[in-house]
Image (cartoon, rainbow, N blue to C red; front, side, top):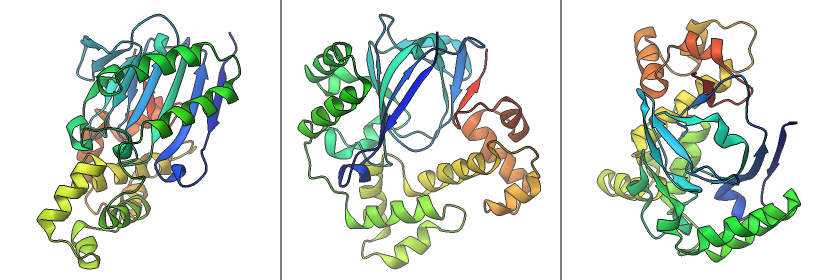
Length: 274
């Protein structure tokens, strides 16, 4: 079967909270499971086939958890594993960091490094949206439908705390240069209050979020490269100690940098494992 891949980026102001809506059809035939890297962003996935969504612990592929046909995954610093057969026909909402906060009643940190069945957080709406996605033949109309439903799900103003918005921008743009201390110098909140609000809205502490965004910068630097000088990569991403660089990489991915590079696919955060 031919692979079908489509992405839709919404207009502002929704684009500040939703990175994209996406559709994928055509599971990979080369491997059975994939390791997904953490990026600090929450996401929602609908499986449009009959099998329930299974997510596995990265250190035990025999330990899987079922999440029905729609799952929300919070911001993560840890990797996890999925079955590629679940990618046969799927629809997703990829949020910006902190982007899910206005659409769910629970604070973002309650889903930190966790996944949950979407029906628990969007009772009724999750099943209804999936049924309507299944009944919609055109992918572009699916995107419009999901955007309409998402707007109806707003439970808070479409905004983040100004200090969180500023810090998110700095940490995403300069993860290899900026520190929590530098951000605190630019805002009017105490350290304790800033960490509390950031954690509540983004889903990770400022320090953890900055570290995982620096990890993402590493992946972006080496992805698709024909050759890699790992010393240069480490220095360019703000590491002055090679051991620290490798330790962070393994902590977030479970792989060494060279193992990731050897297995990398067209998708930045997906790596075959079986």
